[in-house]
Length: 145
Image 1 (cartoon, rainbow, N blue to C red):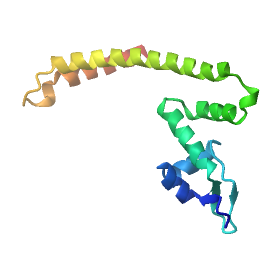
Image 2 (cartoon, one colour):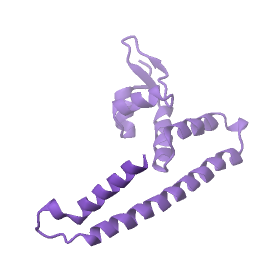
Image 3 (cartoon, rainbow, N blue to C red):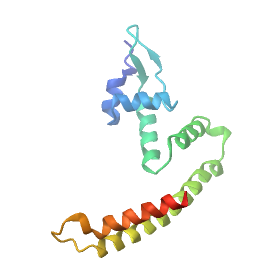
Image 4 (cartoon, one colour):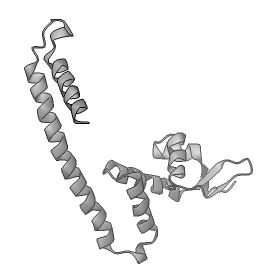
């Protein structure tokens, strides 16, 4: 076997992922085995370790797998793209993160109100103010549908 190729299990160990995750990345066209062995094993190149690390870094920054696929495409064809093309990805992601922060602040405020309204005592949950508030909000949502 060529020493420049590694099996999926080795790639999993080197990248800290599971074999199942790597197969999932294959299904999403983020990763492709260089070839298969005579026995049908997926064989990858050493460069695929760096490719998986690229995917993980982008994922940790909040990019979706679809966005990562686009970034990988740009990365593979750098001469066909500009820094502006890549920067637009981060601009869009910053906007999405800022919107999500606003949503999370609203959720946090509502959760704190629920938490602060609850006595937190040893009483039965029959009269729990948190459950009562959630029940009434659920009824409000049903009325709006």
